[in-house]
Length: 59
Image 1 (cartoon, helix red, strand yellow):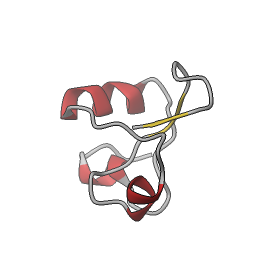
Image 2 (cartoon, rainbow, N blue to C red):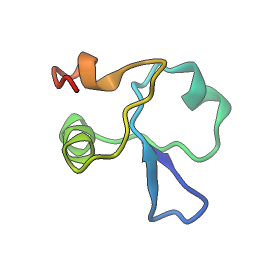
Image 3 (tube, one colour):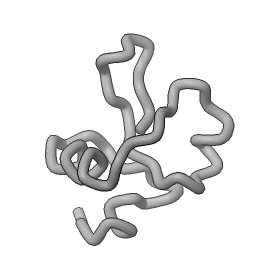
Image 4 (spheres, rainbow, N blue to C red):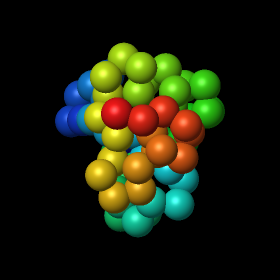
């Protein structure tokens, strides 16, 4: 999960092996259920690693 400048703002959901996660200090690990919940609450999915597809949720 990628946070914004304010740590309470969620910017994007990523998979654990996304190259963006490795380059950012604003990403934190979350459980599968937390990632699903964030996607359901309209937190955008990363366009590179497509966690919505990996978790079985399609746009």
